[in-house]
Image (cartoon, rainbow, N blue to C red; front, top):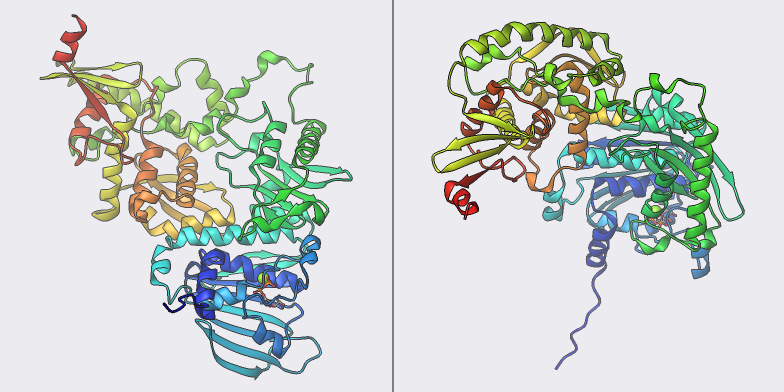
Length: 612
Ligand code: ADP
Ligand code: MG
């Protein structure tokens, strides 16, 4: 029998390699930015179209390439960065595999322009799916420009697998942040669909963080510094009271390279021990410097994981450095004996007002019944904030208008309550169990509804309808509501703007300069809007895989989840019945939008059995 093994042709090998290097547009962004930095650029411009699906271009003012190097750079294993195996242990560059350009050229249309200093003219190369279609001399500034167009044009399956534009943009911005944070001394700009999203001048580290995450960040940063023989740590942690619900702002850089390490993350968390509210995560921007000999960055193709020789010591040093900073900057609330403790709100209550967005949600709003529309002004605020706690919660809010708004609801509460009492002179059929379940009798026995889950279903169907059939009515605000988001969060909101408008969000301002709303969905309250949008952004970022990439669905789910009445909330008779009726008016009353049960039934047979 004839021999059957053959060497793969280069373009096939390159496509296979590309699968490892290029998962999505953001991977191309990372490789190109890193090449620019390795080329000693001091200015790097990133241009994106359609979340990188149409164009990713990086222009740098680095050393450029000779004509021969320009051509060679697209060959696999062609690198100027290592010459022998030993160099792997002395890496000072980002790249070293010589795979990126070859891989990218195998799956996209690539156009390269490059020129070295002191040379009159440069080189212009066009490559499409590994084939060089043109190579010419060109007049171009010193440095390199690589434009990657139509990513995955020859691998439709990969192209179809890309997520929605907001999600891919988010990944690109993440990569951009990582590189920009690791190199504050280099200036970066990012342009998306023709508008400038980031303009980061050369600066110190603190300024770079502030330029990316917003001016308010400045006062929230606590410097961390520690020099030991094994490890030098510098950077910042964010004060615990500003900890985020999402893990968004956690950055470790090892020798200027962004890395992920759950082990080192644990070290930071343990330094914050006792200072963070439940469900929040410390934010940090920490640069670690170690001898390149003591790490192995080669263990992962996309190089965000890393192996340290002496992890345990690094852990200990890092933890103590952060702990020391938190203590030194008086973040840890331990030694303050002079204060009258009885005047303090319990620690748990800090920011409680902000973290319980549902408190003022108008759950009596029944989207399905004309009659119910008139009851929209009813608020549950009264019950939910009964007792002394409400005083603190109210005080936490520094938004005068929202308090004003709350009071208004209180007043209207009393009058509308009356109307209800009059028409409910009928037999009580439901009752609430443990502020969580609505119990009702049915022919076969007993119906137990989970109030939160049921309401999610009700709101979900309502929002779907708003988004697809007819626009929801918007609740106009007396004064525009100004909200603060990071630039990348704003870009996500922008992508969703028209759909959000259909659910009732009206933006009077939505730009780098800020976000302001003049209208919000009727079922939301002013004070809950920020949390709702924050949650939505978070959901977009972690787009649930079973959503079939449908943004409409995701939006409806996210809003339903944020706005649904929480378990633990006491409900009046009317509210209970309202949920019951609305639930069974739904198309799919049995399950939440996330597929869990909204209610269960217990048959009288089952009950009978219990008595035997
Ligand atoms: P690696 O970065 O691992 O060496 P790449 O495929 O990313 O591999 O790049 C191949 C080579 O092309 C690099 O080693 C470098 O010599 C050259 N190169 C790539 N991008 C640039 C750039 N922006 N400026 C100058 N040279 C570059
Ligand atoms: Mg490279």
